[in-house]
Image (cartoon, rainbow over all chains, first blue to last red; front, side, top):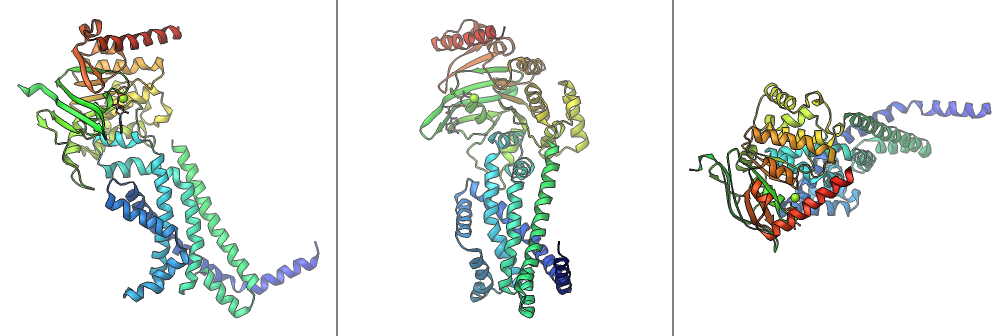
Amino acid sequence: MSLDLIERAVRWWASVEAYIPGFLGAAWLAFQITLVIIALTWAFGLLAALGKISPYWWLRWPAGFYVWFIRGTPTLIQVFLFYFGLPQLGVRLSPFTAGALALGINGGAYVAEIIRGGLLAIPKGQMESALAIGLTPLQAMTRIILPQVFRIILPPLTNEAATTLKNTSLLSTITIMELTLHTQLAIAATYRPFDFYIIAAILYLIMTTALTQLAAWLERRYRVAY
Amino acid sequence: MSGSTILEVTDLTKAYGNHQVLSGVSLTLQAGEVVALIGASGSGKSTLLRCVNLLETPSGGTIRFQGDVVDWRRRPGLLRGYGHLTGLRTRIGMVFQQYNLWPHLTVLQNVIEGPIRVKRLGRHEAEARAESLLGRVGLIEKRHEYPSRLSGGQQQRVAIVRALAMEPQLMLFDEVTSALDPELVGEVLALMASLARDGMTMLVATHEIAFARDVSHRTIFLDSGRIAEEGPSKTMLAAPSELRTQQFLKRVLHHDLTTEASRT
Ligand SMILES: Nc1ncnc2c1ncn2[C@@H]1O[C@H](COP(=O)(O)OP(=O)(O)O)[C@@H](O)[C@H]1O
Ligand SMILES: [Mg+2]
């Protein structure tokens, strides 16, 4: 190990150290935005999944169209549609609202397919015994079916949450000062693209790893249960 | 009078598309009566039971339960309009071939779910009743176990308790021992026999001819969605008058004898 290398590393760190708090702040903001969007993806996903398996065509068709449209178009176009497109129709949303809605609706389509897969994995007899006891379909869903579904779909749901986190990077294009835009501004001021993109990448990596670790912990906890 | 009539089914039909599964079935159960429903696989036993508590919607016919006409034509809405279904199902217990216990809930939670959510019983009262029922079937020490830790026979007894906890006026059993290992069949049949002795009204689809003969008052033989023969269990099963009943009984009894022989 040459002393030279250590010395260079120390000097590199000294040169970026001052920027770290700014990056951490931006990463924290990205993480918070992600939590809001994940909640939205679950809500939209659950509604769309229930719509798709519903016996009513007037629920099935819109749900099917939603999933088809979202999964067949680029996420960036969807974000632009909400932020730049809607004002033309007189709907003016703040960058945060537009971005959260766009990514929430986007992720919801993928979550819907995950939940639908989980619902199909539950034996029919579970719903039937719930109805036979006298539970309403809604009670049967929330009390009997969905808790079992959640356990099955936790791993793919975690993947989707990590994707959501990475997608918040797209919100840099609509002026949200999350991690990616923060990085770009820092680079514009310093002309050190490699250093700062690496720092951003590492911060994203830490956050996605935290998410998957949390899910792994939840999975272990649930496995003990039954 | 119909004071003691629990269930009265008249000309019940059920078709899936143009596949006619039930072609005009009529039957009556008096309070305390135990009726066995026998017939080949695919003859419509499950469909008949499932039409009674409206897990399936009949295609035609009349169902009266405790004197009230069951309005199966009334379709519930998306979130509302379940009152008549809930009311009916609360009074009719059903036990399935595959137990269908809820695996994410403990034995006790399985049993109190209906009383708490449907009958709006307080948790303490629901648990007390559940525990007394579980005690009666010898499963009290399993109350905090998850179903996966129980044997098939224990699971099916819990499923029976779960239905009983709703204090039903009628119990439907759909081949509840068919999925069990042979050595576990006895404990479930014994529980059903004790329910029958206590005066529960029961409609029991089964392949257990001995159970039908010894426990049920009447037996109905279903053949391709029609009642081909019915009568007092002891006489009818000993000496069926219809050729198809004779053939069916010969088949299942022969099967019983061979499996019995291969077991010893
Ligand atoms: N959901 C369904 N769709 C179409 N056919 C069905 C359905 N359920 C049952 N059947 C048919 O109805 C007939 C009777 O079935 P079932 O009532 O389960 O008979 P059993 O319980 O006597 O074996 C069978 O031919 C079966 O294939
Ligand atoms: Mg059947």
